[in-house]
Image (cartoon, rainbow, N blue to C red; front, side, top):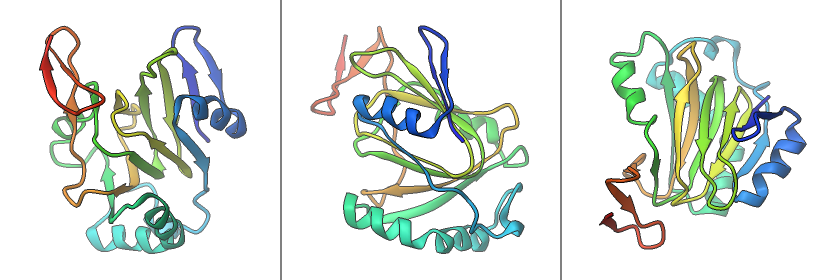
Length: 187
């Protein structure tokens, strides 16, 4: 199950209901779906494209429901493990503060990773996700993501734009990404 840490106080929350209640006021959706229906042969290793499709098939009802509710048009699976080619370069795309023009929707199938989120009017939070955890971070919400020390995670991702994952980096002191209009503006 997930773990939320409020960075300013170091308070940690591990109860799924309390996590959902803590994240809801800052606009983040959290649920725990479980991974019971995931076949054992798809766990704890990097997945081929055919195996990624099996993961999508296993969670088709949830994916279809999210597509209908949120207007998502595509879903894929990202699988990162220590043996992933160029894993450090891949992870470097995620671990800088950025936003997206659409919600960032993830369901963790295996492994774990941390979304560090920066709510406008409250303390930054680390949301450590484990297998079975679902999160939706709203569009234009400042955040970054990093893997656990084991460097392994497999997630289902949903997108409105068929281009998939597109980040707009936010560098305080250099340039700001206008959270309302999406325009890049000098500081």
